[in-house]
Length: 196
Length: 178
Image (cartoon, rainbow over all chains, first blue to last red; front, side, top):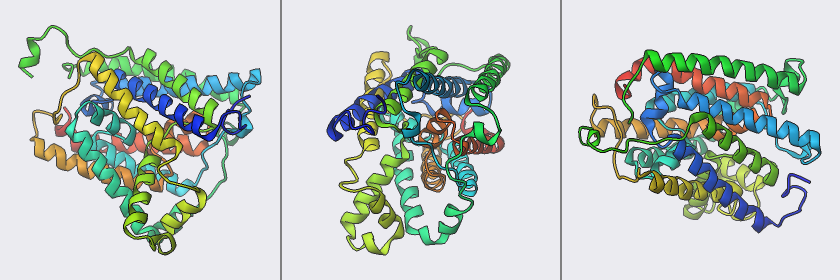
């Protein structure tokens, strides 16, 4: 059955309309969870507010389990679901640059749109920065093309790379997440602060 | 801040685990519908390609960045899944903001720094994040969160690189947040 658009069960325009609805739900959940506040987001790096860790890992695990179960039930063909490719060098280098941007700017691209939607001027300025940064990458593309294309490993799953089945890896990730949530609660008690 | 102490209703946020489950269901829906996860920086790229092509049509041939994008995306770059999704994010965030009474035009910053300093750092952070999202083939949404849900090795690596780096440099930026 799924993915609906890949199996051409819905038209291109229906797919875009659903993208808009999914975006509304995405933005609503992010804002309602507090991701429209840069100081709340940055809290995860100082221990005073661990909402990012809790929401992010719960979200990733929920979707991961949902996909695994949907696959088992035959509701979705997992071979047709896009798995992000792994270019080892740029995955690390890009992540490092993004991490610096995160601690400096307090947002990531998705959350900055969320912040801008409720009137955060710092989020709007961050978005201007995003456009400049993407343009900068495009303008100097020839300079970093080699780095960008280096160490292409294809699109391996982390479970394959570790020699585990998807289910066992999922279980291990859940245990790790539960341990991190416990640490997060401890950190929030140790570094308390007022609500923004 | 002193003013907000007098108001009865303080910031009301969703329980983070409930928020996480809902976020996961949204991500699952995206994969079920489109066969791909959520994203954000891809929509920015669409915007940049549109502007660059409009200002300088010859860039389709001269810029390998634009050329590569055009080869992998036929049609109007603004009529893409992530652009519609991100327009939805603006609407959804706005709706939640209205319901929670959080709609307010302001610069959010630590009392230890000025608004202007906050805005300069926001701009710089945005430039870095925008650049990094292209190098890393997606941001926290498209590469880290969505990549993790489909067990992509690269998704996990990028996630660890983003959070690890931010954590490692947190000390130097502490005045901006605490």
